[in-house]
Image 1 (cartoon, rainbow, N blue to C red):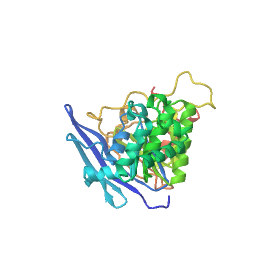
Image 2: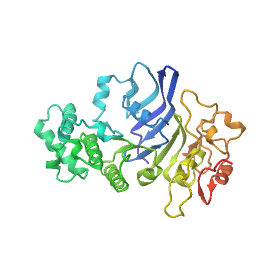
Image 3: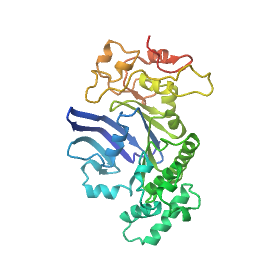
Image 4: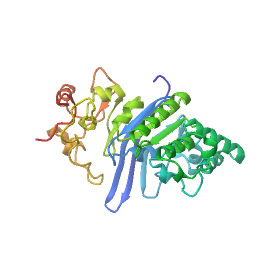
Length: 345
């Protein structure tokens, strides 16, 4: 992307005080986002993806939270913004599509009324009739049939895909510059997933939206993303362009995620590929590389935490957090003719 960054996140750290000690949910996340760009943040549940996104728009502020770092939208520092200032930014300049549309929509209010409420919260001079007209237009723009009639339906009268479309319509009603989509295809069947991804991709191109897509599914990423951040245990372990992550990944965790994708062009395996073990507790991280206990390629130096650094001479914008040399990585990541994580002996 040649455009100047619209959103600049630097050294974001988010910790929460718990009875067991401080839980470091996000540890030093940094990235830039330009207009028209789709940045995918990928990782297993608990890796810090959603907390990163929610912190950007100020939803993790609480007495037991400790937040450090910088989030700048153009020339405005959002970390120093008051709650009143943040409310003006939410919806107007940064909008978010939350993970579960069924719980995000109020079940006792009509879908259209909820969109109208969101519009008039920022457009106080707009009449109810004008806001309703805009709500109908937005529902139509995201592919809901007969929007003038469906605007008066309740959430339970919408299918899962239609509820997700309604949430996208609400998020885009005020023409924000940045859209954050948190697991927008979770719990949807494959055909509806494809429709939602096509919709997001089309809206991104038409509106020149800067989009953050949060997902655990690299198959989703392949459809729409320009750049990818891979997170594990609160840290970014690899970042690069879509092609770099898919065709020349440099971190064993990324190999495991790629290897876990089912392939229709290969014989069905006896069991689905997986990454052994489970993510560590954020209250008790292992020393050094957090992925070390699950990595079959770990060696002595992995007890030291590697920096997120550029390690490929031919790709200075690609960074990873692994001590193996690029030559070792390219040799070790091949499993049965494809990229994957070697099974433990």
